[in-house]
Amino acid sequence: MKKLITILSIVFLSFISLLSNAQTQDELFNSVFKQEKRAYFAENMHLKADEFDKFWTIYGAFENERVNIGTERINLLKTYVEKYETMSNEDADAFMKKWLAVDKKEDAMRVKYYGKMKKDLGAKTAAHFLQLDDYIQTAIKFEILDELPFIGEFSN
Image (tube, rainbow, N blue to C red; front, side, top):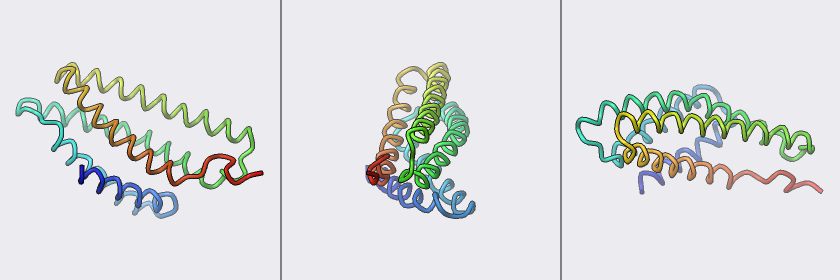
């Protein structure tokens, strides 16, 4: 749990700079975060020796596919930060449609990798992985959303 709090702190602090700083900082953040997240899964998946290679192969593909989704979400958040004070109804609608489309892509990816992991490692291991991933992703989203104003909060 302490490791997760450390990870979330790094993610949160890095996210703020991620929205406004250079590519090299993005790369540094991604590298540190990936290492910490991998360590979290290594510690909490409780894999058997014969499951280790299969799990990390699937996990690597999962994370590689998630990079594009994460980039889309970060770009949406950058746009949001720039425009939330002046968003029209049309802007808000366009933003939410894009946000929901990214959510849909992420959900489809998770279903896809649940199936792969279930096939190779069993449903319990696949479910455990998704539970841990949900925990991390939910905590990250909460930290980010907690710092962002709601649409319309500063208007009127």
